[in-house]
Structure formats: structure tokens, C-alpha cells
Length: 308
Length: 281
Image 1 (cartoon, chains in turn yellow, purple):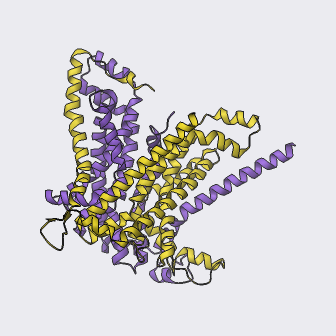
Image 2 (cartoon, helix red, strand yellow; image 1 turned 135 degrees about the horizontal axis):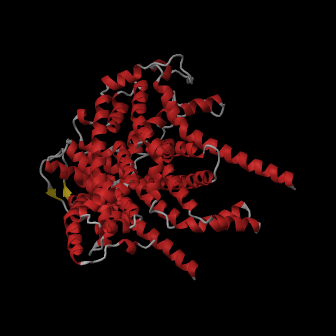
Image 3 (cartoon, chains in turn red, purple; image 1 turned 45 degrees about the vertical axis):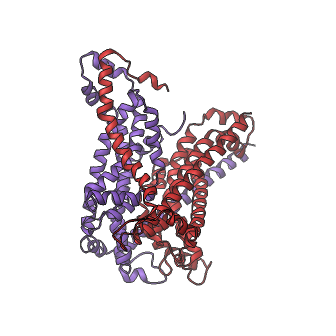
């Protein structure tokens, strides 16, 4: 697709109009947009070197790297970092694997395809709060659906308190998050699957290639880039996703579901400590940027090797 | 030979449908369970072992949540904010998308990249500074402040999406119209915008859903309970009315209906829009 075909040619008067349009319409809009989004990001770094607590003192005093030093001694910071890594890893792996499987299931035509597809994708319309409310009714100790089914099937005897036990709460939260966000993977992967030329499959079938072989040698290479890109995007979003965590477990019990993003929310919003919250945010941002750049470099190196 | 082939094909087909049924169950059970729970009395909900089918369907939970728990107000607030946001986003996106698609200018590449980069910016991180900035501007606890934030979040993605749509519209149509004497802006309104209609639907669905489902920012930016959006209202219900589970379920169903209906009817446009530019053809 050549975009150049659709460009306005520079004919005399229309070039002036073109420049006027760009100046008057696009640049103001985009400028406003970027300032609303990028300026706050910069001010995060600014506030992180201040002792700024909305509730304690009305005065803001410069504190240098105090906030960052405090972070190095903060046990909860390290713990939340670990929880974040577990949270992101579990979510991305589950969402990608389940998303890929369901996308494969949905790509072959069958009776009722569009209805089933709409139904399977519907969690995408649900908000994080709603998802956690839905799953609250399943994970609840006493009247939750899950415990009841488990007891009726005879798998367990006593009630498992999913949401109050430090080791299980994060699993419950991950399940709720996976339920809510897998449709995103499914949508992207479905489209990617459809871009693979069908005659390749037929040719492979004629040559006697089995299902797995066809998937590995035809499908995967074509959609690999899409998978990687979606995984990176989703990893960044999951790192910062607090809706489900905030409403399902509020970061508990005993901070076992407090990711770094949750810690920022608790510090800055509940604790009103803007300075420390900004410092945490700054560190998160740097970590995410490093992670993204590393990931992109790694995949680029691998591509380069294969080309050789 | 043929017989084993037919059996094999049947087995594969059966497995296909069986797995699909599993996926369908996992997806729908939470919502169906919530629906059932919303029609139960509180005493029935709390009973163990769990009652799957209530004796009578009661509507008390819904009337309670709609009036006493102020969900009617939250619903209206959310409809207001989401609609205005979507309207602004669609209009602005059309202008920006047209410009990005048709014109070349200095800094265009970096502008587009910056817009894409905003998608990597996490909401949580902008929470603190945006709160402080809006506070200084006096926009805390106003719908205007919330709408500005929502528009800023949705616009980059929607503008780029619409640009991909606009790239597919041949410029010959505009050139033909201009030869016939159509002015520059008239071309925009009479030709380009109508052709962008499917794309506009896609982004309006995306923007509406995103605004409806947003939780963290309305929570932080609105302190007046009368101005809560429905997500925040639901979140507060979980805390304040923790024992009234029937009402909570009813509130959840109410929150669910609007986005779900919109999604079901519009998902074709939305999916088409999301994937228009994301996959290399």
C-alpha cells in the first residue's frame, strides 16, 4: 500500500492552504494532546525530588534524593517489584497461550461462528471493576461458586479462602485479569491468523505435514512479529494495571497482591505522599523503558541471526 | 481407508466444538452467575450450600441500587461524560487523521511516533501529576476536567486508527470534486468524512467503552459523590455496602448492560477498526 499515492501534490495555491490547515488544525490539537500527556510525565520526575505530602504539611520542601534513598531501604518496594514480575509473567503467559488457542479455534469456520465469537470476546467490554466484582462472587469463601462446585465434586472438604490467603489471592486476581484481557489477544491473533496465505496450508497437507508441523512451520513464522509486539504492549499495560487488584483485594492480604503500580496508588492517593509516589513512578517508568528496549533489541538480534 | 478418515474427521470436529464449548462456558459463567445472584434475596445468597436457582426472581435489588444507592445518578453521569468525550474524540480524530493521511510536513514522522508512544504511557503514572495539575487549574471534581483527561487518553489511538482508514480512501475522489469547484473544507465535510463513517463508528465504540470503564481517574479526580461515574459507584458499593451482596450484583448488572450491548452490536466495526493497521498484509 503506497501512501504516497494519496498525497496532495504541491500545486501553487493549494500548498498554502495545506500549510494553513496543518498549522491551524493539526498542530494545536496534537500540541495540546502531547502536553496533557507528556508534561505530567516530566513533572513526575520533578516532584520526586521534593518532600510533598498533601496531608502532613502544606509546604513543599526540596529534599533531593531522599525519596530515592528511602526506596532503597523500603522492603515493600522490593516486595512489590517481585509481585509485579510474577503478576506480569503469569498474565502474559496465560493470556498469550489461551489467546492463541482460542484464536486458532475461532479461525476455522463452524456453525454459529459469529455468535460464539461475540460471546467469547465479550469480556473486553467489561471494566476492571466489573470483572473483579464478577469474580468476587465466584471466589468468595462461603457463597462463592468455585468453592461450592469444588465441594460438590468432592475435590475439597473445607472452604478455601481464595481472597484472604496470601498465596492464593494473587492467583484469583490473575484469573480475573486473564478473563478480562485475553479477548484482546484473541482479536489481534485472529486478524494475524487470517493474514497467513491459505494455499500454504494446502500445499503442506498434500506433502503430508501433520497439524503440529503445519502450525510450527507455517503459522508461527508469519505471526511471530505480531505475537511479540502484542506481548510487549500487554506486558507494559499489565505492569500498570491496577483496576482489578484495587477492587478485588486492595493489594492485600498482607500486600501479597501489591504490584509496584498498586504501591504507587496506595502511596500517592491513599497516603497523599506525592513526593514518594512520584519517585516510585519515576523508577517504574525507567524500569519499563529499559525492559522494552531490551526486549526489542533481543528480538531484533534473533531476527538478524536467522537472516544469516 | 475412507472409514478411518471419516472417523478421524468426526473426532477432530467433535474436539473442536468441545473446546469451543469450554471456552464459551469459562467466558460466560461469571456473567450468568452475577445475573442469577442479582435476582436473589440476600438471605438466599448467603446460604450455604449455594442455591443455583432461586425460588422467585425478585427485583428489589435493582430498585434499591437504582434509587437508594444512587446508581441512576451514576448512570446519567457516565452517559454524559462518555458521550461528550466520544463526540469530541471523533471530531478531533477526523481532522487529525485527514491531515496525517494527506499531507506531508516537517516533523510529521516524529509527531506520529510520539502519538504512538503515548500508548505506552501508563495511566497509573500520570495519575499523580495530572491530579496536581488539574488541582492547580481548579478542575478537580468537575466534569470538564474528567472529559479533558479522557479525550487526551483516547485521542492518539483513535486518530492513528482513523488515519489508517483514511489512507484507504483514494484521493481521486477529492481531486474530482475540487475540479468541479468544491472548496477545500467542503471536500472534507461532504466527501471524506462520510467515507470515514465505518472508521468513525469503530473509534466511537472504542472511546465510549474506554470512558465508561475507566475507574482510577474518576475515582481520584471526583470527590463529590454526586458526580461519580458508574465504575466508581460500583467500587464504592463494594466497600460501603459489603453485606448487601444482592444489591452489589444488581449494580454490576446495570453497569454491564450498556457496554455489553454496545459491544455486541458494534463488535464488527470495532474489530475491523482495531486490526485495520496493526497487521502487515
